[in-house]
Every structure is written in structure tokens, then in C-alpha cells.
Length: 551
Image (tube, rainbow, N blue to C red; front, side, top):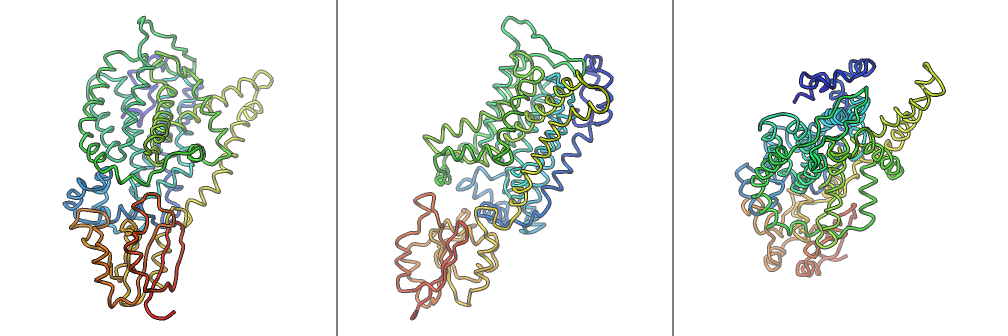
């Protein structure tokens, strides 16, 4: 991809851009070489995302990754038609990772960290490219700032330090968007084939990310050539390149063909996911608090919401902005990408809950693209205003004061969330602490009963202490049953296993989110002859120990 190695404005197929660039812009381009725009944010993400990557405990979703991926590849393929089809590709990808490097926190999370580093660098390249398409001044700076912002956000760190597919989804969503811009501006079908492949991989890592197709469709319609056939005014500035121009009907047809191919390839996993939709019965209808949480996470923290909104709006109006028929500008690409999926999932969830914040993580790069464009536009505007009153070095320093103040404010406010995200108990479950409690109190001959079977995931991340307990509630193990947790035994079978057992551990959810997550009444009654000798409430889990005999 040409935008990753060199400055698009200097490429042979963009002579007008080079001719229209002022000397100071070309000098700025030499000061920020293309490789640095991409490499520096990626390196920052490697440091920020890699720092204390093993600090947070595994939580239930990462335990599912372990139990799903550590089985043979043939067993993963056999499980997909029955359970977890929408994570099938990720489980297959993680199988060799676990086989070679094991199930430590670092080993499980390293692929996500690498993917997020690549996503941050590619976001910087995309920001520079789109800034030039938008005739924005300081395109290299816009790309660099976009990458650095993405690397600095606590939400990015959260999923760079998680053994789940969401960092990979972000990477391939950014890649698909970059390939779309390439395909629109280059002849032939090669780029469209690559674009379709990127959409397929994005969808296989996160099926909800297929909404990116609709966002791209909106962008192309806005960028489409006007009905009267007239090309819009370019709005070219002396320090920036010209746009590739409005999108033609031929481009729209090629895009539709690429999307059709992607949808056909994705249809099996979509069908299986629909059949397995009961796996999402824990998802709750959205509330206003969910919207505020989304805004806070995307902005970095709640006090930064207003700043993020203002800068994003400035980014939308800067350069050619959202002008109809003006080509694939930064705002035309980023705004639908950011807004469509969260809005649609929230609205649909009022009727049928499907909204989960991590399912739309791939929209986050769109926000940093707009905010970085708005920040650079603010610097430019401030510089012009200062230049009317002052000249020289002092004027240059004054022109960057507002943006520098915003940068300092941002850095100060995200430090706290960045520290918090690395704490052992920063996830919904602290499975490490639970395992240590079991290890400290278990005795030979102890049994364990998961209430209900869904809670068996608690013992799958740090399995050593639980492997010493007799699982009296298991009818068929996970691999033979082609499931993640295994098949539960009937209460009568559990009752037949209880004689001779003197101590039983139980695991429950503190706040069950679905009826089948409640402790089964039939199993609870079996524990009536015993008395509780210990209980521990650890975040989302209630761990209890029962024993027979006198109190």
C-alpha cells in the first residue's frame, strides 16, 4: 500500500498535489517522513499497551478463549456448528499460539497487542491520506496525531491487553477503509478484491463489524458525482493536495460487487450465529447510562467528552469537510464510520438487545481521525489570528498554546484511567483471585458444583486449583460434547454422586443477567443437608464452601 511507504502527495500519480504544495508544506513533509508518521504511533502503542500487560486478571471471556483454543483444531471445527461460531476464526488463530507459548496472560494477550500496534500505525497512515484528500494543511501531522491519540486512549489499552478478537477487528476495519480509498483512486479489480477480503476477515473476527459496509456505502454516496455531472469546487489550498475527485457510478458498481462477494463468504458464520443467538441472552436493553459510558470510553474519560465532540465537529468542517460530491474526504469517511454502528445497534436493542460496547470498538479510529483533523485546524486558525498581530518566533509559540493546553489536559486526564485499567481487578471478573482462594482452602476429596453450568468458565483460566476438585455437575466434558463448558448432569445424577463427599465448593453469578444463569433450584436443594463454612464475593462471582457434619 503506497500510503504506508511514501507521501501520497509526492507520488507520480498525484502531480497536481505536488504542484500545489507550498514550500513550507514540502519542508514539513520532509520533517515528518512517511515512515515516522506510521512507526512512531505504533511504537508508542507497543510501550503503552505492553506496559503491565499481565497485570489484569483473566476474566470470563478470556477463559472462553483458553478453553476454546487449547483443544485440537479438529475439535474447534467440530464445536463451531454448535457453539461460538462468531469467534471460530479467532479460536483457530489462537490454537497455535497457546500450543507454542501456553496460557499465560502475556502469551494470550500478545496477538491483541501486536494487532493494536498495527491498527494504530495504519490509522496514522489513513489519517494522512484522508487529510490530503480533504485539502487539509498539515496532513502528516494529522495522521501522526490520530495515531498518537488512538495509542493514548485507555480503551485502546483495555483491548490491547485482552485475549479476545476485538483488537484484530479494529486492525482489519482500518485496513478495509484504507483499501477502499485505494480502490476508489486506482484502476483495476485488485484493490477491490483486497478490500473484500479485509471485510470478510473483519466480519469473521466480529460479526457486528459488517455494519462497516453500510458506513462505507454512505460515504460513497455522499462522495458520488453530482447528478448534473458537474465536478464540485475543489476548495484547494496552497499547502495541500487536490482530492481524487467525486466517486463515479462505475466505482459504486465495483464496490457493490466487492461487498456482495464479502457477504456471500460471511453468510455461513452469519447463519450459524443466528442459530446460536441464545448465547447473547445475557445482553440487556440499553439505558442512557450505556450512551454516557460509550461517550466516556471513546473520549478517554467523562471530562473529555466535550473536548472530543468540539474537535470532532471542527474536523468535520475543516477542508472540504462533508461537501456532497467532493470525494472521499476525511469527514465523509469518518463520520458514518463513527456514528452508524453505535446508533443502529442501540436503536435495535430497544426491541431486541444486541448492543455491547466492545462490538463497536472498531469505530474508535474514526473519532481520532476527526479529532486530530480538528486539532490541527485549530492550530492553523490560531496561527492566522496571531499572525495578524504578531510575527516571528513569539507568534509561532503563541499559535500552538491552545492545542498544547488541550494536549496537556488530555494527558493529565487519561493517566488515571490508564493506571486503573492495569489493576488485577480491572475486569468484570477477577479469576486469578478466585483461583488463589480455592488453592488456599481446598482439601483432598473436595468436590465442586457450578450453579449453573455456565459458571464453569470461572475454573478454565487458572485451571490448576480446580483440576483437583471433583466436578460432580458434569455429564459430558467440553471436547466430546463440542461445547465450551460441557454438558451439565441432571440433579438426580448429581444426587447419586454426593454420598461420600464431605465438602462441596459452589460457584454462582452475583448478578445473573439471564434466567438460565440463575442457580438451578434442583441443585440448590441437594445442598440443604450441608452447612456453609465459607463464602467469598469477588466482583461478579459468589464462591461458597459447604461441608457435612455439625456446625
